Length: 50
Image (cartoon, rainbow, N blue to C red; front, side):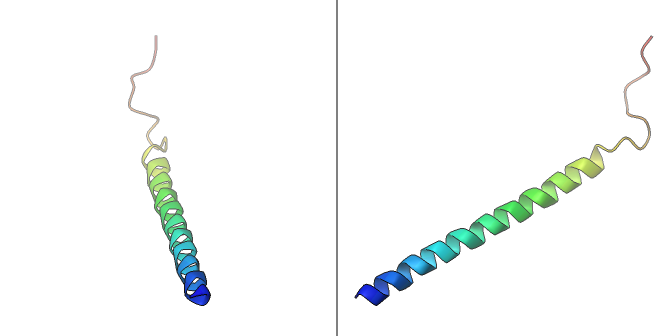
């Protein structure tokens, strides 16, 4: 019974670790896409100030 409890806790911990890594990876991709899309390639879209 005790060994099965240890295995259960290990699986829960492993699942949480994998989920955290996946979330960080998705955030990294999203931030990378956001930074590339907001890069000032053409000098921006606002008209010049007076």
